[in-house]
Amino acid sequence: MTQIAVIDNHGQFTHLEQRALRDIGVDAELVDNDTPPGEIEADGLVLSGGPDMDRIGNCPAYLDMDVPILGICLGMQLMADQLGGRVGGGEYGGYADVTVQIDDDEDPLIGSLAPETRVWASHADEVKEVPDGFERTAQSDVCDVEAMSNGTDRFGVQWHPEVAHTEEGEEVFENFLAVCNGE
Image (cartoon, rainbow, N blue to C red; front, side, top):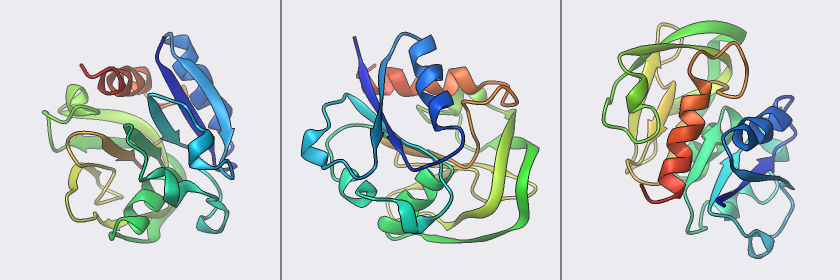
């Protein structure tokens, strides 16, 4: 069975990420973000959302692990920040129901959602510029970078696929599972 570690960045929906993965047959374990990378045995990592960049623990070191990584909200922002992109405050602010346009229908994580999907997202902070080697894979009227990808094993979404308000959230996790399984 595929094992995916959900890195707990102290977000309010982290337990729902673990449950969503378990619901599709994944052995998903919640792991505190202070855990040393060498102690994590997983086929993939989900970097959860959380309240702020000051509480990301060992997440920068996890980015060097040789497994696929999905960053959700803060998880995507810390990935962008650590890999040379730029993060800043969003103009829209708090949580809202947003229609997201998929830019890349070939992207392994969200391409199957094209041409658009409805999501639940917070835009207090957001990726303003993707890192080198990444492409923007989705956008919306309220955020220029709703998702990003390096096309193979590093992905980020601004929204929360684990909550019921996101229409095709389970498909995002299924697509990530397929990447982790080398499909």
